[in-house]
Length: 331
Length: 71
Image (cartoon, rainbow over all chains, first blue to last red; front, side, top):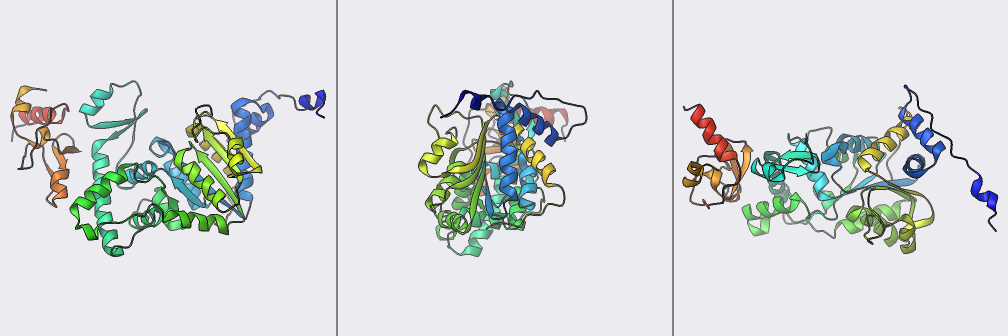
């Protein structure tokens, strides 16, 4: 029986801020408040810290939404190099935007108030308030089509998984800030379960038009499934950090389910809501009903812009871990 | 769009053009697909030329630039 006093155990402690506080000190103030988004973000920091301190946990980052063009590229590449991420599951588009910068292009600060027809006339694409010049896409397409041709000729008709393709591309890059390059160097797999829903589809189409049919690059969308399951089945424990949701989130959750394990840790940072029934906004509790996340998992969902919450969470946890922290890769 | 840009057959008003070095050079995916040199002057044209309703500014700006600095 829950008694009245059980509801009144932990008082809200009002945040005390000062001029020289660190990110983690701010998060500790959030924790003392324990309320709304601040409380949830503080919990997310604790779950992420537990996840990366667990020596036998494989950490997945599920990446959706335009996080890379908006400025998280280097953060993610650094986390891969530090092995705070063991496997990346992403939308194709985020990796395309990583490659745009790896191959010399840029993203620009813009405005959501601009006239989009004017941008169209100037050959500029808009991602909310980030602008990308068309020529940076075109130059990336051109370079990747050349890479596709080279990889296809090396593979001689053997199909690749999306992970194998990312590794082949990473091998050919030089930019140390690239996610694809850092994953290649750190032997961190990158899975793109919805790869064709991105510029990669157009790149492959043009590559195919330029090639003799038999010699064009083959990517087998299902080949990554056993690769993912191999990781989840060899892992003692499973953790995921989700930015956004969508196909990447469910690919990780589903792999955890298919190996009959369920996730032990989950941090979901999203603005999506559960009421429309879409996966991105589905609560972690809903995920438990499927067996994708364990009932006793260390878990939290923080509603808010992941471009704000993820860097805050990462900075706080890096501060807690300290510069000497070393994590070996899993599994 | 000024009338002069619409009248002439140029890469800059062909449906296959993409910006490459705005506004002077365009990338032509039709040429690239045929393994021909894809980066061409916005004033060029070829047999694959297909008219497109000219909405973008690149040709207009390239013409203005050329008029300002004739070689």
